[in-house]
Image (tube, rainbow, N blue to C red; front, side, top):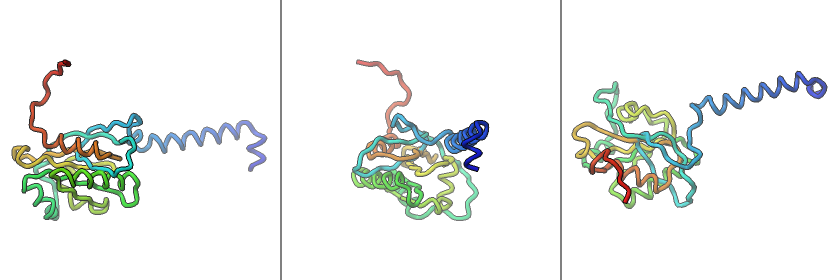
Length: 194
């Protein structure tokens, strides 16, 4: 086999073509990648904090969305989650994959920010995501780690709202997501530089 590859240009070109196809499938088959090379975090929904080892944040899609009013569910949301939400605080739900390095650092960032801000952090392994279906289904959580930040109950006017941020998060990006979730100022508005 090796001799055939060394002697035949057609066999070499065929092997290169197969390798190119495999690489394309690996990189493009996962939804076009999952992170931004620029280090910016895009909005999708909930967020998380990171440890002190600072590296650029690499995350994907985040945004604000309302949760559906009815989701087929066999069990109610866990008590800690509902108690924190009903108390009127900000709830940060982080869904992680066990063993992922970005999951580990995002968890540390969330814990660092939650210790300073009035936030209830809840870290859930991916295998338990179904316990939070009424939150995660409405946000269409599709990647891990996923940081979901619930807007405080008093600010959502009776309609639960949350944001989600995917991928590695720094303490700064987690903090900003939490601040955004409890923002009460004007929305939209034109920007007029000084």
